[in-house]
Image (tube, rainbow, N blue to C red; front, side, top):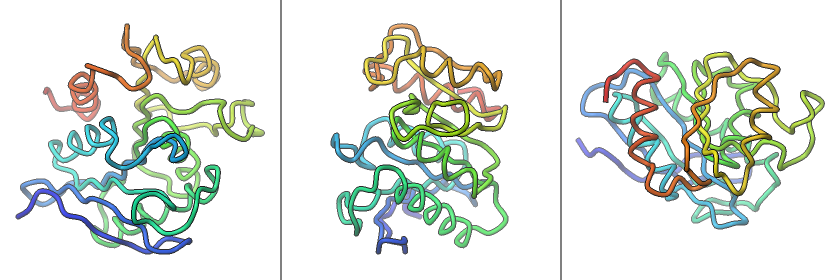
Length: 211
């Protein structure tokens, strides 16, 4: 069985393209991974996104990374996070239809983390994995004044203390009222140069696997 294959699925703005990563045995969960900001060159081929998808596959999950509307071969155009949240919901619903009854994990990097938090309000995934989520960089929310809704207490949150795009202080401001734990990587920048293996290991440990 091929470990990955290109797919398309229906989104609100038209067809969306994605890459499906499959484990060697029957999957025990499904994961959807969202990419960083399209207007800054973000795509599903971003190295943090592919690292997350690979980590999920190693855990025995079927993982889908996909391009938001207007990126690559996906139809539509950039919609400031509103339409992209609908894209993430469409991706999750596609995975739920392909693998019914399995737990859903929503994951995202930067803008993708922001989008997955918004999508989670409707999807109610079993877990969220957020890497350098774009706290405070988009439309302000009525909740916590950070542009980000609250998330479940068992959310995995990874951030670098040298992040030059999303400051750690902004993430702490969002996390503090929720008492969320944060895995802070000392010396890591926004794009986690040289730290991808560490991200994979942190994800594995979160789901109870010793890497």
